[in-house]
Length: 165
Image (cartoon, rainbow, N blue to C red; front, side, top):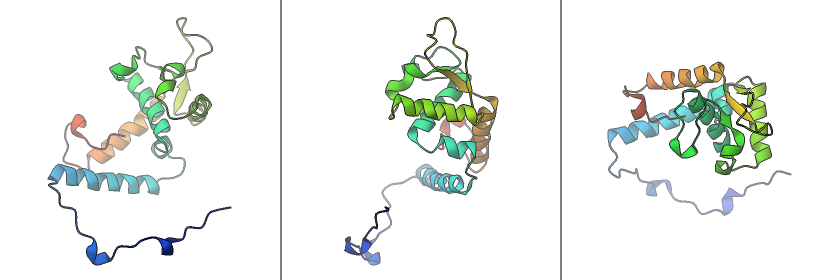
């Protein structure tokens, strides 16, 4: 049964007591806040089967996705010690906020969506481990999203771009 929330019993603040927060924000911070709100709005307007929307539904989804894309570009964070252009699930499980079975389910769904591809384990990797990487489709979808957001800003260098998805 869905719990009904009783907002009448909560403390309220009068509308005249709400002041605009003007604590030394420069134009870049203001632009970033606006773009994050626009990005969130854009996500909500997308179709339910949209790749970007699907991969941003949780931090675990986001991590598994972005790690597979960074592996394809061979630019994974040094802290993760990934030397290949694919990801070995067992090597990254400790960084996730979910159970291993949940991570396997996310990867399985990503493969079914054709966003991820299962990689045949090389000789150096145990056959019990799951190896996966991003498909060209997922890489294109994410790069298209970055490109469409970059056009809405005055940022010209991708490292300066605040909407890192």
